[in-house]
Length: 152
Image 1 (spheres, rainbow, N blue to C red):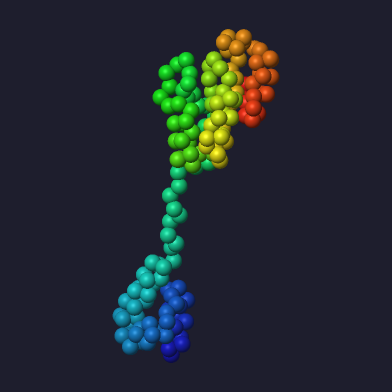
Image 2: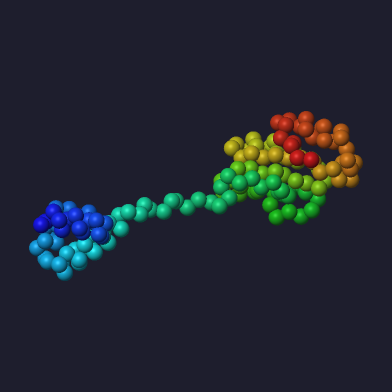
């Protein structure tokens, strides 16, 4: 009889009770069986779910492909060092420095030395300040020490 009750409760309610829990169920009768089953079931649910994963920055590993920082001919809220420091603190993957009038490959080289682990690239914008569409300006920018000038 005990075996039959065990099989029925286990198959109908999906519960697995210890020997002690079954002894309590059998001693308390039908009403006690349902109450004990609910308690056992509730306890099982509490142990099933793992803790949530740790929180991470939503920009962790991201690369900002359009960074205008000082020094510049226009007012900028952050300079290169402040921008790179913020990117490192937020665990970003990298930066691409932009400027409307000068190349930024040399600045990328200096930031990489100061902030190892942060990928920083520069480039050149072919505006009038560098002669417009100027193949020589691009070639010289690419030759800058470190070869971090990648964006035209």
